[in-house]
Length: 348
Image (cartoon, rainbow, N blue to C red; front, side, top):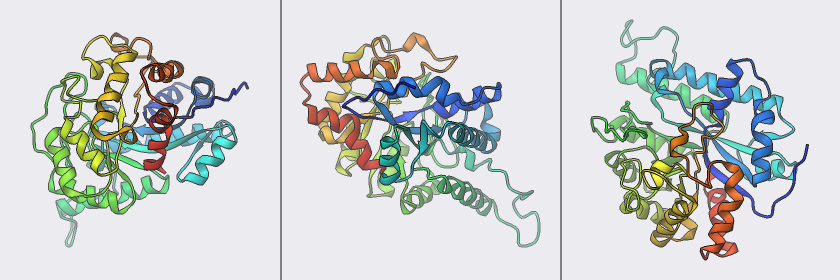
């Protein structure tokens, strides 16, 4: 297999590849990563990715089971393609994978509604003397789900996706419709502190402003937004106000710029619009606070092509983006920071 080398390694802070893999494996495909993803990723220089486990809205009531389906499908596929991809949990594993010319994946969860629906063995609140209370049942579901995610090395957690759950609220990322706003709940505050104690990165992408405020009030540690843009340039609820960008920078965090056109301009977009968001965030918190969280959807059968960013439609366009950044005045050191080093520092 042809595996040409590129000078610049790129790390994508947000990919929905696990969704693609579970859907295709459900239809009988095998070795999905090798057959559909490896070559395009490697040749673009995108050699490290945060693979997000995201449960589709139609699975909300069974999101715990759906998350397990995505995880086990991904694990099975990685095993079948172990010569070209590796799940990594630390810097040594990452460097070993790259030296072996494998794409390195680390895991994240995009939305934690699965905690509410985590399957337990016929437990219900106070179903028997001494049984769990409703709060105790939720805590047990959380503990069990986190034990699994820790065991597979999950590194990043987003509390909610376009929904209101037991932790937080967030706007629908496509329609922009706001949920009934309750912000970060008391259970959500517990989860933020617990995630920090487990060494997982707390990610405020997809949270509404009040929930993000609650996260920032609940921890003084590093917080990121893995795939969010600047609201000052594109005024949609899914993007970050400058005050949140500054707060992320003050904590040594990172903002991963999202390539989805709806979050770049709200309509049609091109590569320069993506670079504009990099410039805006860098002006607020420095080039060491910016990364890539592309959120590419070109490999999905039902991707919303009407909001594709022209010239940045998928990973094959990443070299063109790096070239344009250079033309816009970014130095080689700054490009390396934004493309790789900043995300590497945070995730490993």
